[in-house]
Amino acid sequence: MTSELSLYIKLQTLPPELKQEVNEFVDSLVQKSASQNQKAVPVFGCAKGKIRMSADFDDPLDDFREYMQ
Image 1 (tube, rainbow, N blue to C red):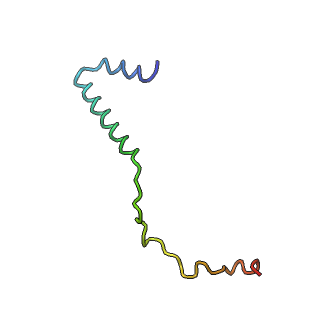
Image 2: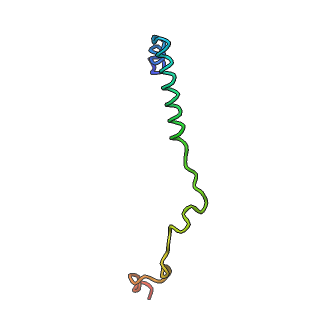
Image 3: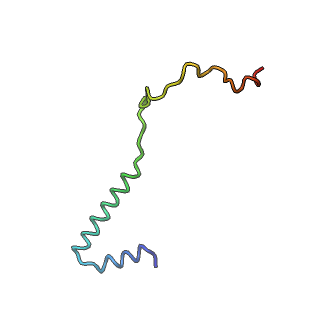
């Protein structure tokens, strides 16, 4: 027996007021799932000023001096 069929059978045995509670709970789960699946869209320029490069970034490294000769 599949889990969906088992769940359906259990749901059918509940009184109407508990069925309403189950319905509200399932709605909250659907809403929670939808909010978790939304991905944040980055805004262009949002990292401006957060990354800095030193003035000597392009200068040759002393560690590689012997390979550059």
